[in-house]
Every structure is written in structure tokens, then in C-alpha cells.
Image 1 (cartoon, rainbow, N blue to C red):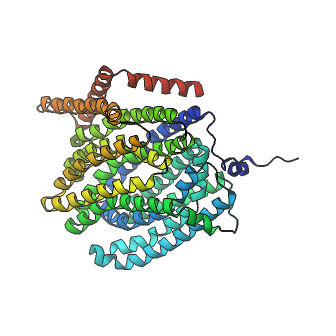
Image 2 (cartoon, rainbow, N blue to C red):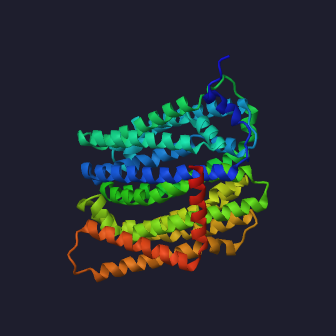
Length: 501
């Protein structure tokens, strides 16, 4: 008898969360996540370095203005339904089908909304170019909605190897298309067609990998039963959107496309810290924390270990970007991007704090306290918007300083999240204090080296390499001197990875 295609059995296995061998599965997920982080970071930064030399700051500014509209729609696309599928211990085939049709309907509705709004962007931004870009970018919402359930199934099964291959392939298609079109002279349109081709590739690969075919049925009562959680997810996505786009909108209107291009590229580089490290790990930790939510001691231990590792990695990366901004900008982007140096320096500090506390999100989600996260995120958003408005008259550098200061709020939200599982303020300090001290000392060493080598003739790329090497050695030695726990954490993780291999 012919055996069933294992890809079809994926759906059945995903209906019940399984906590067996959870530690090994988390390690496996983390290994592919870290490998994905390295490759995606290289691909992203490398492609941006090439595109920055083929395109103008204004091209990136136009895309940043369009992003104000598209990111809002994209974040609302699943209405939190995919996260609910991941959080529930048991789901049914009918619930999967319901989420698929709900997500597709919402994706189509949002695409039409963005298409309609594209005709008003001339008034909104004072430039008709954005409207023309949006009339093509709106297609990404339909494409993205088609794989909502497929992504949830992979997350429930913790199939991070599969996600890794799909994400790398998608990014390669996106970056390759954009670079080719930019080289051929398509200008800003290369930054539109590239993401469209990437979204299409992701949808096709998800569909081929997870053989889930939706049935023509819909359970409205299920959607109503999840309304409270869904609305909290929606509220948090709205707040996330505001935090990610209010500054772009205000800067675009106030200063125009080219200054916004400087700001957006500086922010994109620092967002790599969260977007390529913290957020992928959130996808690993969310289903893991959900699976052990009833085991308090095990959950606390897992959270502290994960938070220590995350802080130990992200603190030096974010603060390191701040420390070497003066050398990194001309090396990666060229002389025309020098105005972004002070902006990058400030946003790197912000990325260090926000990324190091990113474990808060999967804790809120796994404990089904998305409503509490919404309330604290709302407060943080109000403070963020107010600080941007107050500092805008003083220029882009002042806005960047305000954003760096606002990142301190994320530490408070992190403390609240730890409190949900019985951890206290001393645990916050246990996680953050030592990596932050070591990273700040690293920053001071790099600043001292820059001052000492002021009169020495060295190529800027060589200076960058020297600063990075000195910073890495300083951070490692200081962190180990402050606590050997981090070495044990990384040694244990490495041992598991080797054993798994």
C-alpha cells in the first residue's frame, strides 16, 4: 500500500502541542535561528551596501514613506490569529480552515484599502511618487495572507530548519531581484519589485512545504471566541506600527525624501539587531514557553537562560554599531551617506536595549496576557510620539537621541513580563547588568583607540576591522570577568549543538 506523503501528515501532527524533547527541539531551533541570523544579516547588509551605491538617498526615502502605509496593513494582516493557533495546546482542522479564510479575506480587504489610499498620498506626503509605488506594493498583503496557517503549523511543530531554508531563499530572491533591477537602471522601482518577488517566493515555498489545503468551511463562533485575544493582538500591532512609523511619517513631511533616506538606512541597520536576532528567537521561544506554561520552575529557568543568552549577544552588537558608526557608514554605504553617522550612533544604543529585552513578548503571549502587554505598550507609544514631536524642531540627531532615551521603557516592560512568571527585579539585573557594563566598556575602548589613532594614516576599512576586533576581545574578557555563567551558557549550548550534529 502506498504510504502517505509525510508533508500531508504535518497538519495532523500540528493539531496538538508536544512538549517531548522540548529542550533538544529548542536547541535545534536556536541553531538554525543563529545560522539564519548570520546568513540573513550578511545578505541584507551586503545587498544594502550594493543598493546604496546604485540608488540615491531619495529612493530609500520614497520607500520609507510608502512603508508608513504598507507596514500598518501588513501587521494587521493576520489579526493575531496565527499567534492564537500557536498558543493553544489543541487546535482543530476546522479552526485552521477558519483562520485561513479569515486571513485571506482580511489580506484582500487591506490590499484594496492600500490601493485606495495610494491616491491620497500626494496630499499626505506632498509627493505623487509614493502613490504609484503603493499601487504595486499592495499585492504583498494578498500574497502574505496565503501562508498564515502554513507558518503557524511550522511554528507549532517547531520546524525551524524548514523555516530557515524558506527565509534564506526568500531573502535571496528579494535581494537578487532588487540589485539586478537597480543595476539595470530601474531606480526606486527595484525596491518595489524586489519585495514583491520575495513575497511570491515565500508563498510558493510555504505551500510546497506544508501540504495544507483549506477546505471551504468557516466557523464564525471560533473567531468570536478569540475576539478578546485577537483584539489585544491587533492593538499591539497598531502600537508596534506607530512606534516603527510615526518617526518616518513626521521626518518625511518635515525634511523630505533625502534626509528620511539617511534616517531610514540608519534605522534599518540597527533594526537588523532586533529583526535578525531578537525576533527570530521570539518565534522559537513562543511555542516553547507555551508548551511548558504549566510548569512554573521549568519555565522560569528557560526564560532566564534564554534572556541571558539574548542579552549577551545583542548588547555588544547594538552598542558596537554605535561605537563604530563613523567607520561603518563610509565602508558600507559610501561618502554620500555620511550624514547618517550620528543617527546610527544613537539608534545602536536603542537597539541594544530593545533587543536585549525581547524575551518579554513571548512571555506575554505564552501566558495569554496580550491585553497587559497592550496597556504597557500603549504607554510606551505615547511617550515615544511625544518625544519625537518635541525634538523634531531640533533636527534628525535630536530625534535619534530621543528614541535612544525612550528605549529605557522596554526595560520596565521586561520587568513586568518577568513578574508574570514569578521573577523579580533582581532577575532583570541578573539578565541585563553584566552584558550592558561589558558593552559600554567596549564602547569606551573603541572611543579611546579612535582618539589615539587620530594622527595615524590608516584606511577606513582597516580602522573598522581593528575597532571591531578590539571591541570583541574587550567585551568577551570583561563579561567573563564579571560572571562565568555566560561562558557556561554558551558552552552548554555549543555542546548540545555538537551532540545534535
